[in-house]
Length: 329
Image (cartoon, rainbow, N blue to C red):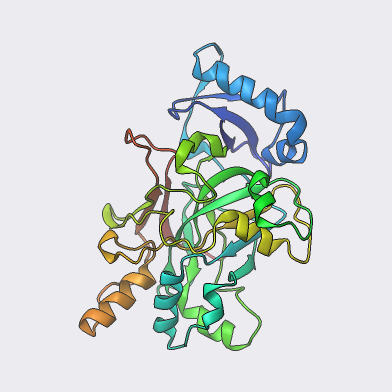
């Protein structure tokens, strides 16, 4: 089942069921007006949404509409919680080298996670406003994320997988040049992590078939200005799978329905597959040649993030965002 949220001049948008080929959609307001409502009432809504999805894919919905990704909010335009991990230790190693800091050995055994801002998310085709020219070091991060139902505190990983209700792609926007100063204060990210954007479509795990086992075993493609930056496989070198990340997030608290948990920047040890962010590209340039040539994002740049199935069809739709100069009001 594939779900999306259309813009309708409200904070939480309008819930749609989307066909598997991403060509058609049916409004789901008679079942659930918003995705958050559906997650809050998942047991009552899931079966009805799946029935609508089956009819839509079978061509039995005659008042369906053409699906337009550009009309989408992020599936959850805002969320009660957005917790982003860093499950690819190969990425952590490079980022820490870029800041000149050592990597604790514990990161191989205990997940790294921070709580991000979730009151506003960009839509998947919304622009990214840059308020300080290029001084802040604007970067993208291509990731996978899950959405949970209600998760009890203290849950173990072997029971956590069942709490994954939806999956999405993420552009976790980062301001790299603001990170060192914030972390030096010892209190974590805030200004260096502005709003993120999620894929046009959120899918139930069964849509991935055997490519889902708590990890998503599919390459994630990213391009800047139509130039491919990388296509590492999200299921390779992910040290902590999503059930383990749920366990970590719920160690001392319960998680409310609609909690989003990110994988962190997808990164493979096989560097021939490229990268999912610019800070990795820059660090590899420095290590290999001693010179950084790749700039961070600037106004006018366009970032695209997407995943494809075995037939070359887009699974989640694409995140495609243009960097624009922010005009202060």
